[in-house]
Length: 140
Image (cartoon, rainbow, N blue to C red; front, side, top):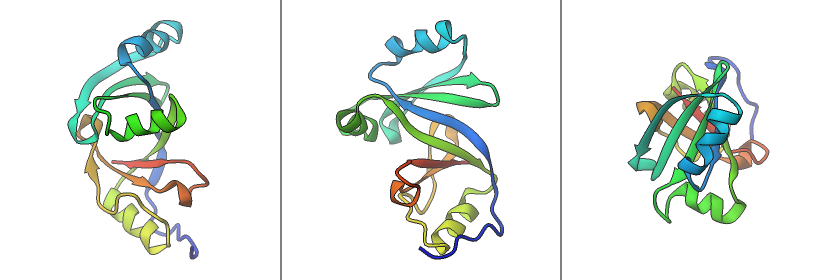
């Protein structure tokens, strides 16, 4: 991997932590009632084969991810690793620009072009081989 250029970088803050769960209905009460987090939205993201619940946590969010099919990335993650933290998402101003900058720096990407994620946001993933084992999501 070459030198990573910060020039032109538009990373801003942690947007959310993605947590893989077996069931939103079983997991939500802990986050809503025990922790007192505000549920912002629930939706199904067909392209990603998940149901998503987004909870407000200070300036960031917690995203609970329930697989809706056995071949979803979240189902595969749970089978391999169990439930728990799936990814960290960083908010960026311009995802296409950020992906190009990372690729040009030799960073391994899972998605070289953005996909549509929860809330209709553009998302793309950076490969854990480039991030010391952490799945990193960029979101705009």
